[in-house]
Length: 289
Image (cartoon, rainbow, N blue to C red; front, side, top):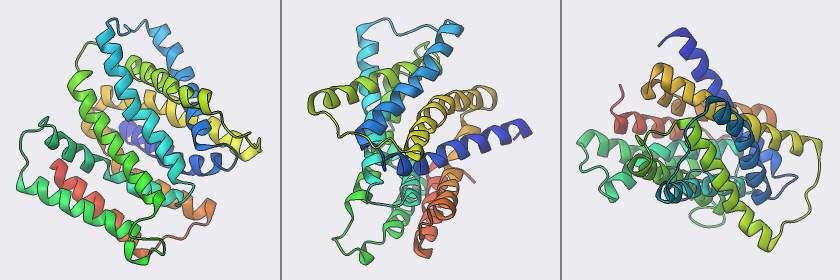
């Protein structure tokens, strides 16, 4: 891996890994729906001008926009909201650790809808190992409120939603002549509309305009969403998707360190071991050495 690629991957891991910290701080002043809506709008505000300057082609047909709307629901609106809701009940580091199950969900969903026709013994072993690690992370035998906490379910559902989106976008949006930046900008705008509808109908509680909450939601939207999409696109185009995918293995490390150092979160040894097992399962399932 080139040195510049290492720097870019490290920056992206720091940005995406810190998102769980910013979410945790943002929901102290805003509702999960408000955090998600502001994040989407600010992320789109970063990408739309870039698309305009580059003169990237936008989707033209109603079918493409329909697929984009569905992708926006599963890739942005649902997982962003679910993580924001989940972090009201679980630590930011736990959310970051459970997010590592996304590649495993992607494979399972691809197999379920026949987007991937078969699986190897190595991949099956990786999937089983990975979800076994997820059980170690949330340690249901230590829960006082049942087998699995609500926050854990919400974070796992968010990771599964990401998995659905990857399969859906690969089938209906990838390799259609549209740039990744244009697709991302359109998705964020569509996802903002998804959030605007329930917010407009049901309303939202009055936010608490604390300095930390405001700064957190600004960083989450402008950097953690908008700028991160651009950086990820640069890594993919310059060094390939394989290099970009290594970010997966670094996100939980960043989330854990920030959760412990800044929020004084307690991380059980079993959770650390579970995260390592999940990442090992991901490596097996992806065929990585």
